[in-house]
Image (cartoon, rainbow, N blue to C red; front, side, top):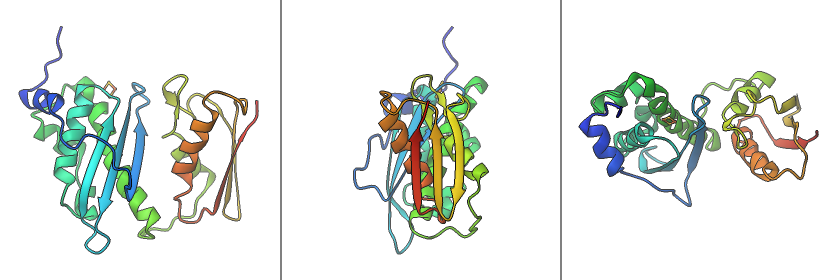
Length: 211
Ligand code: FES
């Protein structure tokens, strides 16, 4: 049975706006969904004076709902300030699209998380984080939940490959229970660095592989 997608969802799915990557992006975020293993990446170009989103693009490895939501939220976010764009919700995205099947809620949440993650990434990289909460092991673990284990399409924490997280004097050490020569080791290391390095009080990230 075909899913009851609205006309607007189908239109955005067939002709998604703002698809692609921005090579010299000021910020980016890659979010994965534990529910289905799909991913979405959001890239931003931001005017440093007005903090307006000059350009925004997304890449989706998700379903029609995810692509349509990525399309609509990037349209909504373009030209807005970061503060304004933070207020874009999945409910708003879903309403703009004329509704999404309830089973597909996580797909639009994923796209909105991508936008929020990219804004957060900009703020962290540009010293704009207002609430400077000290990084804890829990903060690091939460971020690692947003890194996929490419072998199974679920995050690193759920798949129990994170063996240890240590924090001392601005250095974060993450131990991954895979061999150092694993085919995805370099990829996993890179994703961990991307998620942890921008934290305001983190100076160094060490990723070790130990099985
Ligand atoms: Fe994975 Fe929709 S089913 S993004």
